[in-house]
Length: 256
View (cartoon, rainbow, N blue to C red):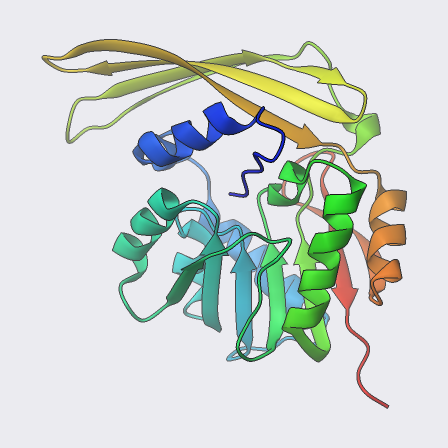
């Protein structure tokens, strides 16, 4: 998951990902990564990226998508959080290349056939300028004819201001129980999610902390302008993994 702290306001969030990364998989253990990976597989195939291709996941987090995609493609992944990548390594072993990088500045030794940026990670880019940087980095990393597939954050018109959400999960092995709750708010194009966590650890006590997520609600028009400006041929798809977040598929034109 991409974390941007250039303005200081994301520093608390970086600490959460570094210090409590183990809570990420617990809170998302009900997410059907296998089914979502099949959707990704279908979309890549429709855009010319077949089985055995070299596919990179940007902002791969703890590697739950790569766990399923590795059986279809030759996969690599990167993230800005070493703690998240440590958990990914435990799932994937040494066969999958993982490295620490920012999606705005990453580079590959050899260009790849496909790049996927999933679970709304693109929304952590703070503004259009950062999106332009990432688009340029994606362009450089792809071979001619390569495909970029983005699963974006909520579109502005789909945003639900003041929406209340709460969730609780229990780790059966350790007995740890974690709850988080949030009420959504926004400032312009920026959605702000202050998750309040309660983490109860047997024989130790209950911890409370707040985890801030600030994600940019880029419009479909903005995505099209930025990605075509970087040189991509861009399609705004109807497929979506969650409401208000339809996939974007981009192709780097082949050499003529």
